[in-house]
Image 1 (tube, rainbow, N blue to C red):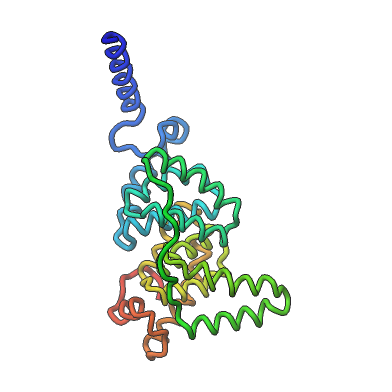
Image 2: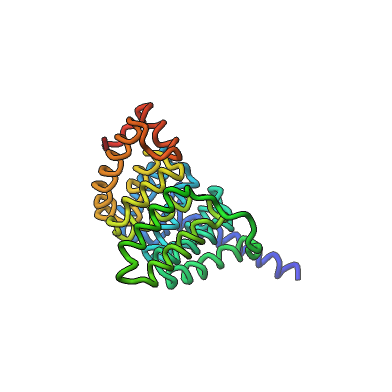
Length: 282
């Protein structure tokens, strides 16, 4: 038995040494990347994780939320597990990860969400994370005036054409999903904006950008989302979002200056009055 134990220990050490040789210190990309596409390996180590992930404009937790959301929304399920692990390390709770998946079922479809569940379950099992607890907590309070205007708009635009879709939009999507307390309103906006940019749905962005700022996102944080997603959803999707951000920012700047903006947009307007951070958008 002692000889067997010693043999197993030597084998384990040899495997560890082999892995270290395959992935030298400081390298993050999978070992095969350096064999097939060494330039990609360098960009992964030095640029993506050595620069982009270290930018102060979004906290690591928010970057993980944006990344996981973009991967799920765009169906990049093979990459979800690794970033779920990173999200846990960056302070996103298992319950929040589960709710991100739930939220994105409505914005990117059930197949993507179910596939993400399977990938996430593997990570949870490896980390010994217990099954999610039963739902609890009071529904989130949404701004009554904004919700009334949104519901009326849905009823007018979609109601006459697809009445069932309009009814589900008002009753389920905004009447229930957006009120679930397992994820803050701010984080739901971050998830939604990331998912829309990653899937090239720029035409849906104006409403959700405005809603995100009402929910507490700052101009700097919003502008950093497409910057981060250029690396996860591609430059075309990121650049397609820029004109939309510009239009929303300009409209919000005017409303903040006149005091006619939504009073819930305090963080955004305070940043505008203080000059914000330079990000190339006026």
